[in-house]
Image (tube, rainbow over all chains, first blue to last red; front, side, top):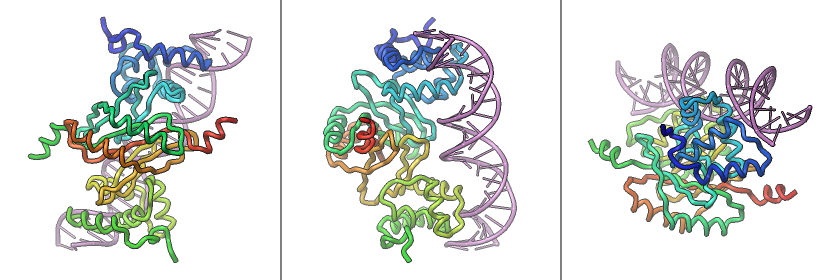
Length: 156
Length: 156
DNA sequence: GTTCCTGCAAAATTTTTGCATCAGT
DNA sequence: ACTGATGCAAAAATTTTGCAGGAAC
């Protein structure tokens, strides 16, 4: 079998996250481990509720509260990026140790979210971060608009 | 007297917004007018609850539901920019017809939000918008980090 | 006179918290 | 053993919706 959570090998991020948790003196509880395994297998942002549903479906009796607590802990250690794109639910995704990351375009009509990367944008943000009187630890860019198919649909 | 809502003259945005509402065949109800007057006087994002509290304090009997409904309508017409920066509450600000706008830095410790502008960043986003297979109508950039005073406080 | 807008109250959603119990170190 | 992590249930906070009355056109 090949569940959603083990398509990839352990995932470079999972090990990184576990090490960081241990370094912070935190323990390896079941719920937290499950959230790590889940996130390391995703390639774009997921909501707490989706994570919870997926873990439940996979077997372990994980509570939604623990999912939120795990995400909060991971976010606090800079291991998870949290973002909110519009419809009220926050989304979470693994923050790779390499700093490698992407941003998101959201279709305002069908609510679909797609990731994108852009070197020039990252460079502009890096320069900007140096310029401002503020210690910038993370950033997020969200583009809002219409995906090709919704644009088509609008025309009719 | 000089309430919060009339420090500026009508505000270039208020007129623009009223015209757009009229063009869309919508009416000038009390709550909607009050929200427009409030937003045109702000220079950074505000939450629905803050707007509601301010309007109540200023006199008119406006309901929170109407504030949300007005913001939704304005946002739908592209007159208001909606953004979420982290602590669960969405923030709203006037979207000027000139396209002129700013982005935000958020201190993760004291939750303070500050606006900033950056030409290079806008240019990178404009180029990017042309590149992607997506009709980009708006965008938002949020920097997360530590403000000078919280950084200081952390050191102790 | 219609139709839209509004206030109020109730509901739905998302997230947080209290507490007893269990598990990791 | 000690302390932190978890599940469950309840609470809190934010946003949405139903409905009857009032206002704009």
